[in-house]
Length: 232
Image (cartoon, rainbow, N blue to C red; front, top):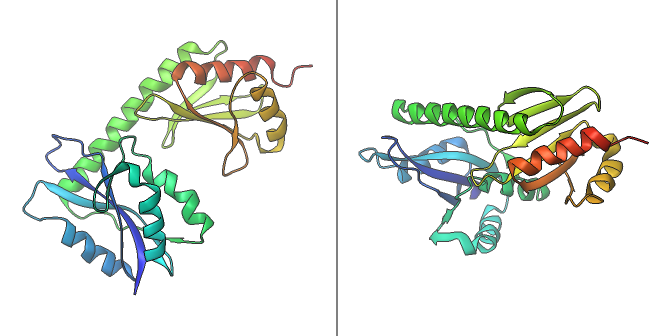
């Protein structure tokens, strides 16, 4: 019985090219089966290796796979491979998988030295990019805020408003801004921001979220909240 739905990607262990494709497929039950499927896809004598980046277990994985393939048909490259230029496919799939009750499966860390070196390099490059973005946004803020660069991206802390601003960076330059600790005031902050032209959604943790905005708009939204939100 095929009960695992997985997302895989190819990586160039030589580090010469970036491959923007993801494979969405299914396989049998258990991590052992998932590992064997990974080995089938990855040619050991090729500089291009397969890496499983996420997997879920569901009793009707085939139906879920078919539905997802139809949903993503516009980005299909060939067969079960889809273009994921912004590297956001898993993030977009997660709410769907949660909705249907799919269980996340822990992915074992790769033991391949070359693959591990590429993953380390990618992490280092993301950290560097996030630090640059942190500096760019900081320069646009009217009032200095305590900041840090976390795994999720640049983060700003407001003692005055008791809010935390998380910037989820995107390769396109259109980032997501999540406003932490805003769950209790979601209705108020949503009304406040929408009255000023921002489109606001409620994030998974209940706080306010603005999607796909540039560095300048991220800073503008933070400045607006810091300057006006909660003022009489």
